[in-house]
Structures are given as C-alpha cells and as structure tokens.
Length: 57
Image (tube, rainbow, N blue to C red):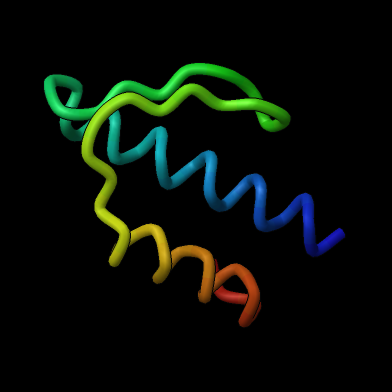
C-alpha cells in the first residue's frame, strides 16, 4: 500500500513538473517504468514524497 502511494506521488509530481516546464522536462512511461529527460526540481519532489509518507495530500 505505501509503495503504491509513493509511486503515485512521484509520478504525479514528475508529470506536474513536466506540464509546467515542457521545454525543460519530459516524462514518459507508467507506474512501473519511467523515462525522465531534463531537470527535476528535487525540493518539490522530496516535499511530495514526505507528504505522501506523512499522510498528506
């Protein structure tokens, strides 16, 4: 259960970042495998993961 929640949070955040900056980040794939090409904002990604583990949105 926790693993699925984390996968979903990571995928959602990477897709959000890619949508906000399509010229800087491209994300393709599924919940099992991803191809990520570009710059990822790690601070935002870590915040989403921490929130997911803590039970946040």
